[in-house]
Length: 464
Ligand code: URP
Ligand code: ZN
Ligand code: ZN
Image 1: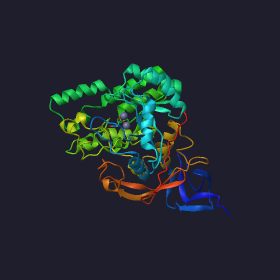
Image 2: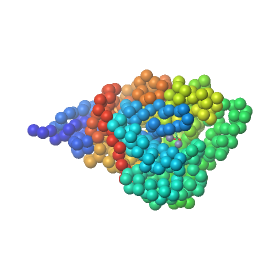
Image 3: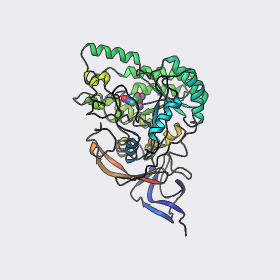
Image 4: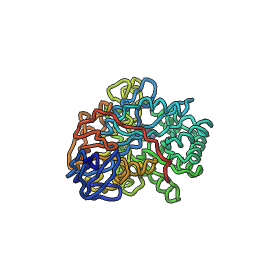
């Protein structure tokens, strides 16, 4: 007799964004087809006793193979980044496809697709980065690409070659509104950063710690306020990514109180690192933007997680090697913090850090963990209900989680292309032990499946 299911996950505790319950899960053709007390009749039965059975993580903020300046090379390609993602319990990542000046969005996309094709261990779905919002890009390309499933894009208020003027932001937001795409923004005041940076360099203050000191909280708060005001003027929902502190959070809360659809994202670095981590001989390892702040900001971000200011928790995985002149030790970066490549690795450590610091320490429920790491990403970016939940008809994107396993985070156990982790020595309780993408086991007990089967997933237009 043919078995009813390809796979049954048996005896685990299923956690969704709304419920926790004991059940078996039946999988056929890569989808979840049954959820019941007891199921039988499968080619393979996976014993999940003592495990949490959760939707695989969706990391909606990762950078892979992104050009990052003269002589700088990102440490991950699609193979290593998605391998690392899979080991970290993720089943979908959303990398950015960066439009260079003068480039069409389609050209940018075809380059990234070429890099990703056949290389991915988990599913991927591209956001766009709009850096050159010409009438052609806004009037023709963005609307057409939104129809084809590229339904989100990021704008930058800082970084040479990426930053948009307020006028361009308004025009690009309007294109989001007309095409139904989701707008995201990196909110830091570029002029203020340049002013403070020039002053620091004039004073001879060039060490990595000055990266944080020249991007103080008002730089982020002002830009967050302005971004929200621009979204209000354009009449468009907006995601404020990588929020690092209370004052920026308060801007989001105030906007929501005015009835605006403003969403917030925070990241592990704002929960467990501080600016002091940049104040060491190896401080370049922790240079990212916005910078980690202080323990009061960490506490504020935890409040934002608990109270729902933050809808999503992402890694902002942006990996460079440390001991490498194409990475954090770029010769220019050795001269001044201005040139240290911005970004840190984190796709593999994102889930364990939130589980351990959030669920195990009693700050959030397991359901909220699932919402913040998977379901809300799917909802925000048009992947729901295909992804981000455990329900009949959903893709069988599942992580089995050992809630008691104790691990010391260390470069030795990670799978990214960087030669370090910012979280070296950090102790966590709770660890992913099996990652399944569309019914196929990708990682089991620390071993990667040999076949790469990640696909690019076109997305629906997001619901508000
Ligand atoms: O420092 C960071 N965050 N690098 C990645 C690029 C970005 O702004 O997200
Ligand atoms: Zn950013
Ligand atoms: Zn980023």
